[in-house]
Image (cartoon, rainbow, N blue to C red; front, top):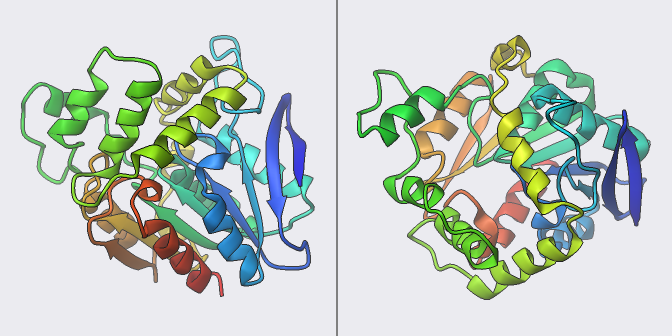
Length: 290
């Protein structure tokens, strides 16, 4: 069932599957990525074991409203408020929250600041929400080594890709290829279908770049200690992640009491275009939310 939910002045596209009587899994996508980035096979797998599943388009993506960022800037707390508005709109008091990349950071924020809304947390391909990658990125682009104790920057291949001038559908498919990592096969036809569908359903493709602007806000709420998280937490990370190398997942798990770290061999930053990984991630979420 597709529904539009209001979060303040913003309307968010949401899609709900399964029975409202079943425990809810809220799926939160990454930066500038529409909710349909969560594969149908993953959704169907979770529904099949007795979960209600909700996915949604972030503001500035897909069928959700776009925002004039210059007039109404927003930060991580606002994206987290959107997630709670989605739960409210579907009459869900608390959910199993599963987020990838930015979605995992939003999940951390909720688990720290709104623990009553988070039954369990699954953070995939994520980094500690209080970690500011800016200095490490700047040093890497300048050809300088990381500072002592600093989490590693993206790989050289990823850095070359993000500085390339190419834009458009083919360039976006190439982005997913790079995020897939260099170990496991890349399902290019599936990635191309996803990019084409994303283009077709987006109200304003350019608005998604606002997520990068939002990510530059480092308010005190992002620096709250992750040791305050009480929800059972699973950290899933690929050992071939080109954006957040494995040390990011290790650091995240180390900061959350009682968390479990699952390092997936060969997995890059985005697992869903590598054959077999959608099923693996589905199984991990299913077990963690049992």
